Image 1: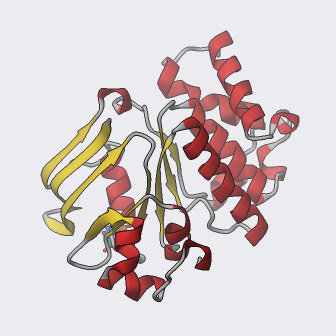
Image 2 (image 1 turned 135 degrees about the vertical axis):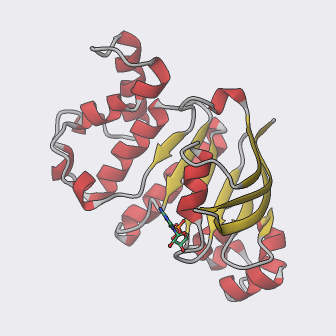
Image 3 (image 1 turned 90 degrees about the vertical axis):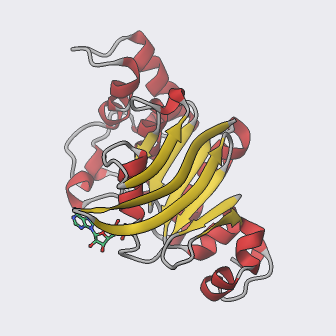
Length: 239
Ligand code: ADP
């Protein structure tokens, strides 16, 4: 099932295009890496996918299950967020706000959903801890559990490995791979880590150079632009 389809989409600010003529599709269960250097328009595309910014031209079609907050979004961590004075449980629960609608108190269903995802990500024992006292890797797990509360089908992550030590980074990648393979959750990963893209992606969308590339990982690795950016990797294991 196709969940997102972008046709001839141009995005930009005040009439100036940033990303031109974007064409790609995302199917259920896909693992798509959106790669490109700083300033290439990755954040702009995130805003468009979250319906925070309409395209200048072209069309973005989404499956109706993704409309109205159905994408679980894991934003890039800011220093302010790292210092957030709330408990892990509260942060995870807040992910339910979009999906279950706003209410003055969290109900049984929300609490159950939050518990389920904390369990899945191995952070149940941290539920009452203050978010800002956790390690970077633990914080990312909390944000991932929060994003999972908002969706059953799609996660959109903005550089989730940025700032993590190599071990926590690997752990994050493995968790995402597991959610994708075992639970068929579609993953849209925005990153400039092209080597990780070559290791984990099914499809790659490269937006920093024209012509833009969209295709399978293997096609990317063999393409001119892919060879240039991955340094000619032949095997997934090279990443
Ligand atoms: P990336 O996420 O890949 O680093 P961005 O989407 O943040 O790239 O930025 C793409 C381009 O759009 C940059 O040239 C940036 O200066 C410009 N841009 C980003 N946000 C705005 C804005 N709010 N108004 C005008 N230009 C912007």
